[in-house]
Image (cartoon, rainbow, N blue to C red; front, side, top):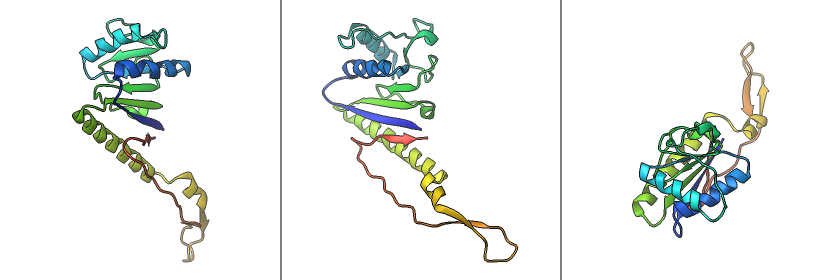
Length: 183
């Protein structure tokens, strides 16, 4: 199951927020891929990660550096994770079609740019809808546990599974606070 977090950046840009998140990622023993929307953003983030004050050092590489498999953090404009990363960071409106390949996805966007906010809301809605479709496609464990097999009323026909209790639960949330789960 993929956890998708949306980071509505209003006081800092990705060049200030990303080093903190990547530092926590490395501290957790994970690898990361940072998917940038364009080559200029990739170059700016590459420079920012080398010069950030906190954490002191973030080892990373780009396609220009090569050796992706040796890099704990990989910055790219390509939708790939050649370093085996399980954490994906999306910046500058970058989109990935393989969200389910990652344990966590961090979608960072400029909260002061109305177009970026609208685009992020679209990505949030799509992630929420995809999670809902997956939930509906397979019964939750609680529903499976609440079902029992009973004999069919007609002699000689197959047994059927019927719920013994009604499943309950609700999903609520808002754009700013929801982390969509896919899996």
